[in-house]
Length: 550
Picture 1 (spheres, rainbow, N blue to C red):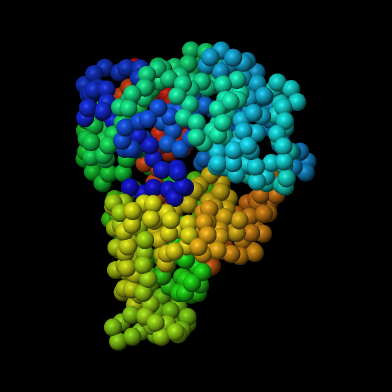
Picture 2: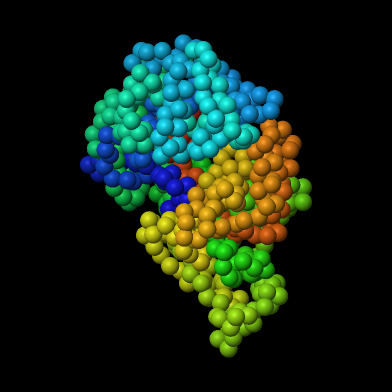
């Protein structure tokens, strides 16, 4: 499967009638429990810690909530546990006003003390601060029961999404003595969310509705069931048989195996979630030469990658690095019609020759140093669509005189090579967010890279460019949307003209769903949330929009 390179953000779990689930619903009347799959990961352990690795599905969003909901497509902010937020005139203070009359599921009141406690807990235990909040925070205080004030070390307005939209608030009265939240598995969760734990087993996580939830009349879904799965094969079989309401799975057999079995109810929507790209190690030749990077890029047949490797489910990516059409409002006028063209061997040849390369007797380029142009492309073993793309890259580059060898690695080795810079080229993708800034920041910021041999956070290609950092700072230092848009468009220009990363196809957010038991799912015409069941807290938004089928 195509998966994000957001470390630790890979998919979760689910199951059905292979001995891991709750039996078939095929042919039955509609019911008020939702059966969800988020990816095979084997048996569950009793882990409901929102800051602990491998927390069970449903922990983030269904049980523990955020202050705001920020739509990943439109950047629209919806008040959640907070009813309002405001930056000071100098953007160095962020104040949240909290919703009143919210209770924890054990009946205790939710107050600003819980928010301040949660944020200060992340300061005390940096391993739990995955958003890096305290790189920017000076202090967090609660002047009254419904106000939280965050003082900033420096201006960084994108922090609103990090703290408001992706930080899960925990109850001080139950967490004040748990220690490091990254190590606490929280076996009996108490949250503000729409569901509470009903039953747990290694084969099934079962939640029931929180009858005292702060949104009156919600949820309309009575129960959530997350069965476990050990393989894609058993998962796909049960999906095809109609035993799952909500699924995230890449399968080339989707139309025949799933949709055609029940075309009235079985649906899918795969919006782009990231750009699958070639990550080059820019610290060494030949990738430190922009003409070589351009030659490699224009020699590639992305249309073939989209059709063959991704079964037409993932469209060709934009050279700008934007996810289109979702981020079209940020697209510069100069690039409105800029797309990757068919491979241009002649132009690639000119670029290689301008970089000082000449073809040897075997048709492979030799560099100015007399060495044959040969390098490795890393990919994760078993990620079949990415392996196929890499094999295509091998073939297409050989046609212009470049030897690119595909190297399949175990996932941990693959990640380690990226982190430490011990690679030539790797296929991968970068984290995304509600605006293009988050991808560009992850991909290109100097603050997210490191010297070869040291751990880079996400700028694995080791792009170091003052102009890029200035544009990122321009975006992050203001709430002025026009100034932010100008900064993004400057970054698009760098992507197109300097090619720090070679985009290939849009990575899809795999999302299959059935309208047999529930209606109200997000669609291309109503993109109220990013749709896969592993996307938190969007999954909560989806469930709260669902109503039982008639």
